[in-house]
Amino acid sequence: MKRSIVSVAALLIFASTAMAQVEEPSQINFLGTGIVTRHTTADSNSYGSTKSGGGLVGYSYQFNRWASVEGNYGFTRNNQNYFASTGQSSIRSDIHEVTGSFVYRVPAHLARIRPFALAGGGALIFNPTDQTTIQGATRQAKAAFVYGGGADINIVHHFGVRAEYRGFVFKTPDFTLGGLTLDKFTHVAQPAAGFFVRF
Image (cartoon, rainbow, N blue to C red; front, side, top):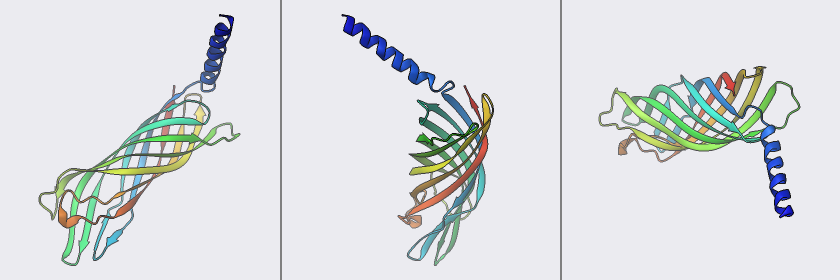
């Protein structure tokens, strides 16, 4: 009986100590983003998109000093461009970004700066809004691997600024049109900056 009481007491002390390491485990991020897509070629066909800006909102929960998880939603709008020997086609589309990541807080003895690295997955959802040269394009989701890193900089106790870089690897969209299928992976670079609130 005494052994059980001691075990439960030790577990409670350990749990409370682990929780005490992070006073405000929740954080909401509001960021402005840039979108730069790598030009991708397959045979005589190629794919690219126009550069654009957008927004990103996210929520993270920090388990201890070095580990947290984060979910993000982002939005941008640009043109998906396809080049072939027969000419160029373009589809204007909204892009919705939905991702989840593990975030590793890099140990650093800095008073206000908290560097981090992240890796995870999710989807980029391409929703055509203006079919300038292609008819019949439909909404399409592409699975994506996301990686990146950055830093949170505390300004006051519950508020600060964030700067980060996120990269996405995914297969080029074709809007379910066989003539646009490249069957190749491409890369999007997404630099971002904004602010966060901790609670």
